[in-house]
Length: 183
Image (cartoon, rainbow, N blue to C red; front, side):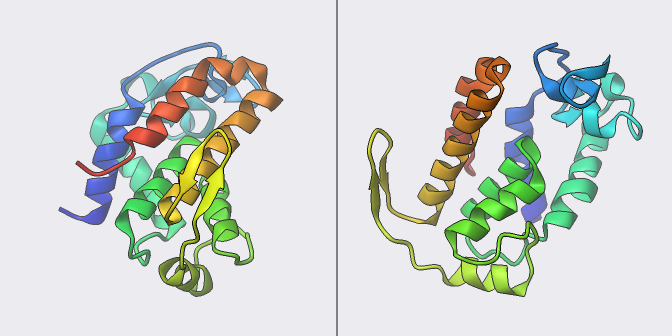
């Protein structure tokens, strides 16, 4: 089994099948809940993929192909040696935004946050020496994955602050972070 296959298996457990929630921004063909309400299937959102896929009738194999072509390859994750961290970055890229997910790890490892993984970012991630930090109300950050998971928590809390309609998804996002791991 390839690394992509291992990762996509975890991600598909979080994404589920077809849904058409009018509160979900990704279910519309336009930004900020504008355009046609089409839905999301296997996590493939109408907002981004309605022009290349029939979202409602999308098959699992078609979804996997989209994840590979539009997320896995552009994110350039295969050089990250810590596969648990790689999975979190990939999962956040799928759920939130691939460039945002990469900028988050770049900030943690203190490199230019340009949203692209090249040799400098890859080296910084692979050589990062974690530092222990206690976050009031959150807990202890011991390793790079803890730091990344905390950054994800902050991102989702910020989304709810900016867009209160997204509060309905907050608990699910937090559960998703905790379920993002290999069996």
